[in-house]
Amino acid sequence: MRLTLVLPTYNEAENLPRLIPAVLALPLDLRVLVVDDNSPDGTGQVAEALKQTYPGRVDVLHRAEKQGLGTAYLAGFRYALNQGAEGVIQMDADFSHPIEMLPSMAALLSDGEADMVLGSRYVPGGAVDERWAAWRKGLSAFGNVYARAILRVPIRDVTGGYRLWHSRALRAMPLHRVRSNGYVFQVEMAYLAHKLGLRVIEVPIYFRERQWGRSKMSFRIQVEAAIGVWRLLFRYRDL
Image (cartoon, rainbow, N blue to C red):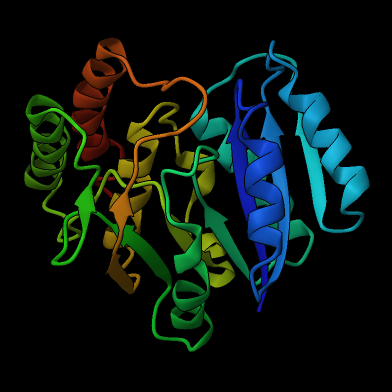
């Protein structure tokens, strides 16, 4: 199965030279697309150097400014589908998501068992970094419960960003209607998958704290996500 990993980046120059060789070493037919929002730390230039190191397996989309997670993923999805990807991977660039899980997750997708495979922190066997403070674990768990309760989505990790989509699923989704441009983008895509009756399989993962670079999460982003969940109810009333 031909896979494309879409990596939105903003100030990930420390992580890319570690992550891309690691994922390309996996036993998968895998290409990487870096979508960089003109990172001031030179992430775009690092990505271009990796493109030269791995010709035909790494590509880069350079955007003029920081435009947000949602638009980066949508641009990456469209690029990957136009290039003939049969499956598209969402994954953070900071090693929070266990890359060693990719082959088994991809097998579920290629076997036709799922339209989307989700690396889940909140199914039995899943967990978040044990070094997290209690308040941070509680906030993360509450965010999932909050979104699931409002949208009535059975997916346990509705905010999780480790996902493998079959190309047929992405082509079936009204991506032109997706408006969320922060972390609620993950919720919107999960909600759409549920509304369209797509088959979602959640597999347990251990979500690690990033080792290099700085987290993009902030209180403002969390408030925006809380409000954005309510907007989704009205955006897709016709589905």
